[in-house]
Image 1 (tube, rainbow, N blue to C red):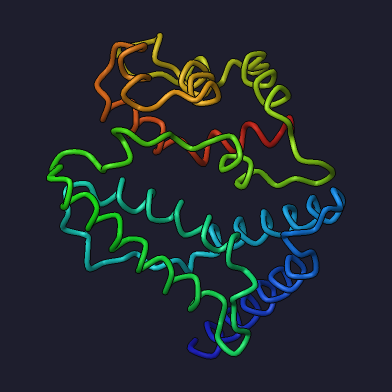
Image 2 (image 1 turned 90 degrees about the horizontal axis):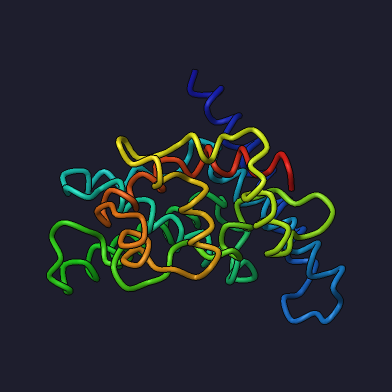
Length: 225
């Protein structure tokens, strides 16, 4: 059994290292649009593989915190952004997931420290004054095959909502606070405080509702990207 686990970890690491090397082939400062797109595609594949490989740390030392899930999601978002920005710093001498979880642990600590410093006990800091997942960050979670979606294309997909999935996913007793409305507000640059005021729901409720459905949102949108 131990050998089976080791074999799977080795296979995963080999796959991740191939994706890392693919991303490194295209320097971030390149002025060639094709190279930039290929780098983005490789990074998208890398992040998605990391996300669903089942090897991300649970950060169990923080499990007792009341906002553990929100902290986890925020720290993970920062981790993925840092991986994309610092992919050239990865040392192939170590497993990719060891590098990822080391960054994840640091970012989790930063999120908790920032929250405590602000004196907030009910909500993570990012639910107040900082912007929600931007279009660029949302696109990082969408596997891009040919070209990177523009804002208007993504907005059109959300507005059309061909399967009525986004509009039918709403906060209990608040049908106006549905995923379609939330995503369109996010694309317009609104922050959580503004979103909660426009939709008439508590800030923490709107944010938690959105974060818990991120995987469903990405799965739905990528069908039309």
